[in-house]
Image (cartoon, rainbow, N blue to C red):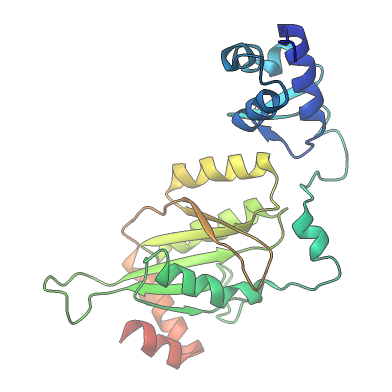
Length: 257
């Protein structure tokens, strides 16, 4: 197979971008072109696609770092959403956010090792306009710890709607009032553009980001951004503890005793 010239590389790149309305990242685009044209040097490919949003601005735009989308992707009134085989497999199956509370709580404790005790909450059961974390846990000293340390609350917001990243981030950020760490979990069906923006927001504000598959039997949670530790406002820490104790004394005892 003959080597591609610069014009051919850009034409192929724009065609690939057009096939991905949800966006395609620079590295994935480069690997796709390289796989289809192994005789073309990687440096040649890279040199012709790194500024594709400028050289082919009529066809490609770059809404965030390293992400290419079709130039007309935002012109439709219908939101663009990545559709994959996972969604097709779930067609007709009703999946609820609450189905992922227990699995995420277990993953937060055993895989991520962020908490020593954890419990699912969810909904608006605690009756506050600032919401209720879907999952709340605590990291506290154990009897075996020689050096004791203050208890820390870790909260998480889980969304299964890929079109709600801003809502999910806002809620998880609000939990920092009473939490030392806060996480937001979004499905892998979120668009590449939204994922990129959400990832940048999480890094800026210290909120953790987790992605997962909409498969209740195997969500495959994966960490994208680790939550940073902050000192919460102790007034709101106690307010949250009081509300939790009134709402569910059993969970309160499990976490704070």
